Image (tube, rainbow, N blue to C red; front, side):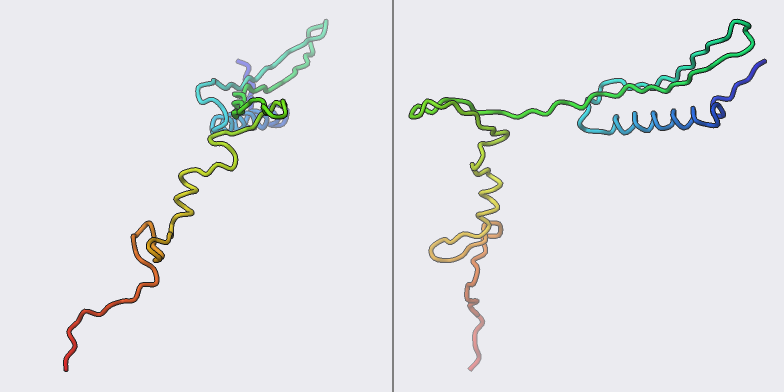
Length: 140
């Protein structure tokens, strides 16, 4: 029985190329920018060509991989026409219009506010710079 060890072909080059291709497939599978459901594959191809006397053969070895494509990224545009100038416009806005404050922005900016002339921490309700009053009875 003839035995060909694939890991020894071309001084280990087939094994090395196959390992690199498998590593790229695994990286592609872990990439959150690719669809999780797509199948990936590694194909090892051996093409044999012989001479007319049938006593010599050339073997082309290739390792191909099929990866999932990177998902396209998207954005949104508000489009319209300036009624005064007649110019058309397109403005990207994504999750919100540029320059518009989000709830998170307001909450971060409003950590400390002034109420009735006193600085108040909105997270704790604590009045800042308040004088501590000692209600203990003093002995005479």
